[in-house]
Image (cartoon, rainbow over all chains, first blue to last red; front, top):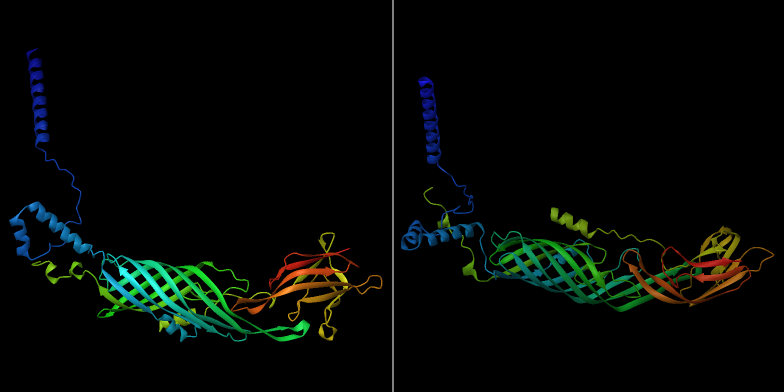
Length: 290
Length: 147
């Protein structure tokens, strides 16, 4: 009996010791709270010299200095350009080039583009267009009289993180033109009735058209404030005046009605705005002593 | 060089094909009791056409082009059935002539707007103008209903 009682007491003591040991281990275990990684914090050194950074910490609130450090780092990753970054005045002379390849119409326009935040760019275009064509083996001469056209639209610059000097953009335009054209030297034969060389002409036929364009453009600074740009446009007519005598072949500012694609080459003169608010590309901002 | 080649290719690109006739020509179909019929031994000619030329002569035809004059606002066609039993019929069209520019590829032409028409009723029952505006579309615009 005594031996059994002793065995029971020893067992209870051992169990109690094990329980206390386990409890003590759990109590001393280090708890780790998951921390959300802040990958875009302090990816690059803060703005200013080392002395300036240290001075910011020493002279005031370290939290404020830390916030400034983060802001500077993010600003370096996503440079913020001012609302009014620059104004570009353009001259589209592409058709002068295309006429050298046989194109029978031309339009030349002036554009004003306001670059906002180096991303969004409202555009206004005003130009003049004309055409003259006497196709071989055809029975007419088409003359599109010099007529004005207007376009409104906007671009989105995909390279907004880079300098405005280099831009790759997509854009939309809404164009309108009111124009006149002549169809002359018309020569018609009606063999069955023996009617040959019947002539007529249509002069000052008045029309108008509203059209839309999607475009992709590239703009590259060449020297000083001058830049060269190329645009590829896909366009379609939304609405035009209905005329009993047919549809115009050439629409000022749009081009030949049967063409879905158009190209532009422009020379730009750019006026920087709020230059002192542009992100600074500064050698001293690079990491030091690393 | 690549840019110049692309430019040249695009400038020369045109996909607008010209289909159909030159000026508008009415296409007339023959019907009998609402169904299309083929006329046998038929001769069709315009009154005043040079050298008495015929559109068709002693031929079988289910439909026939009837070109309109462009120096007058009226023209007449004779349907000669080449039969001793049946008299010829005459159809007269009065119309306006409309100068029309189709496209750069198809050129300038005339369309016509038929304002009125008359016909004899020896073998013809009636003549229906389906569309008074005659363009160069290759579709039937006149039905000639035979008795």
